[in-house]
Structures are given as C-alpha cells and as structure tokens.
Image 1 (cartoon, rainbow, N blue to C red):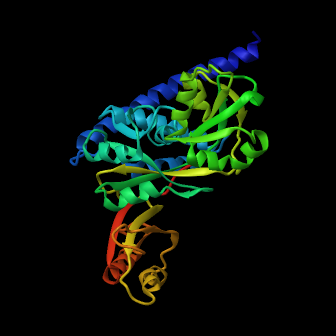
Image 2: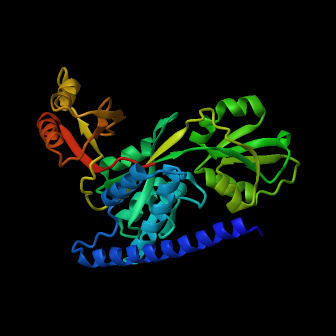
Image 3: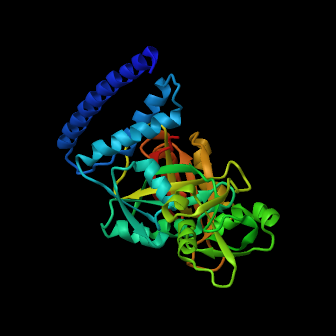
Length: 360
C-alpha cells in the first residue's frame, strides 16, 4: 500500500472519529430537547424540513443535496428513536413504493406497520396502532389516487407532510429470458405507466392488475409454472432483492420523469416551516359562478393555487367536492384571510392540513 493511500485512509479514520463524536453530541441535545417538550409530539416535520433546507443551502459538494438529505434523515431518525421508536403504516407488502416513500421521509429508525390496503392505513392510524402513515395521492402521469382523496374527505387525520418519489419500474421474474414471458402482474397504475414499453416489447403478454407492485413480485416469487408459461411482475429493484427475482429490464416506465407524490398522515397539526403547503376540500353552493366565487379569495390575497381536483361527493348525483392545494400555511396572514372568505362562501370546507413542502 502506497504511503499516499495510507495518509488518505488515516485522514478518513480521524474524520470518522470526529463525526461519531459530533453525532452523539447531537443525539444528546435532541434527547434533552425531547425532555423539554410538553405535548408528547416526537416527530416535528417542520423542524426537520428546516434542517434539511439549511444543510442543502450550505452544501458545497461533492455530495449531492439528495445524498446530504439521506444522510441527515438517517441521523434525525435515529436521534428521534431515543425518545420513541415511531411506527409508520403503509401499503404493503414490503417492497412497495409506499415503503420506499416511508423510508425516505422517516429513515430506518422506525417500525413498519404493513397494511393490506390504503383504507387499512387510515384505520390503523386512527386506531392508534401506528403513529403515522404514508399514502400515495397522485402520480405525474396517471393523476390523482381517488381512494386516498375520498378517505381524506371523511377521516379525522391531518396531513403532516409530503414526499415525492421518482418511480423507476423494473420487469422482474424467476426466469432469465424475457421472450418467454406470457403474463405480467402489477398494480393498475404501474401497468398504465409502462403501457407503451409493454406494447412494444411484450405485445402478446397478458396483463393483470393486483393490489400492489410488491404483491405482484411476491406472487411471482411463489409461482410454480407447471405448463411452461412464465410470468413477470412490474415492481422496484428493492422488490427484486426482497423476493429473490431476476431483473429482466430496468426503467421501463414510459415517462422518465414519472413521479408519485405521497402524503404523511398523523393526528396533530404542524407548525409553519417557512415553505409550506395547505390542502383543503370544499363544496360550492348551488348558484351561478359559485366555483369562481369560491376561488377568487385566493387571487385577491395573492395566494397561489398549485392543485385543483374535482371528485364526486357521493352525497348526490352530479354533486362534486373540490380538492385544492395552495402555497402557504393556514397560520399565514394572507392564507388565513383567504380561507376565512372561502368559508363564508362555501357550502362546505375542510382544511386537511398545512405541512412543509417536500424536500428532495
């Protein structure tokens, strides 16, 4: 080993010792802060978002901002666990993109509560069997997840945060020859997101929708082919590792910018972080120009709207509710004034939560 290489390694060892000491000092301070809290809330998404934004702003490289966020999310997760190991509910089985979103937001210092459906995620948090939950709400190519929106309308849970996750699909199988694939299983949205690739590469393969991508991978793992037909699943690389499957093709999504937005659900409100978003659902009174009247307070108070989604209200034929995302926290003066005016004009309005905008 060259002397120069030894010098570099010795320097790394010395830095590692400093990092270890500083991380433990941080953990002691975090634990002390936990002892001063009087509301029992361990997870402070607004504070964690502020920390990550500050670190990214000061990041001189060569590590990317995403890498810096991953490192410090892990640090914060393990510091948080000194107060309490949080439990996080998500759509299972292990290996779903919902699990990836939960890991991205909360790190590895949390317990997993694997649920069989999005409905179950909501029920699990409401019943106190999990501290928080992560559910998909919209995809950049396939649009809103209607079930999540419908559940938000009636659930007492609050939106505490959001996570954006780039979605890169892989074709997984026990087989190694892609030309032998005759059946493909995945979630309906994933099948739609890979429609063009599938039509071009495996035009004769039958497609079947299942409850989740990871469930599809699990099915392929357990499948025994007795008649010479071979199946594959569309899922993540993590699912391939979990279920011991071969990756026949990577990045098969039609849109390389394919991204899913997830919501973090909990039972408490979140304080302002400085870069926030507020989600609400509302219904108009039955009058001409009602929708314009409902939205005009946002323009009058300079509040930017980032999403407007209509859904059947399920209370009557041809009646709708509107899901709206706006920039700002409900405690901000202009947002508060706009919401006050909307409440006076709406037949129904419910603030689903104010929370930090997603940090990469």
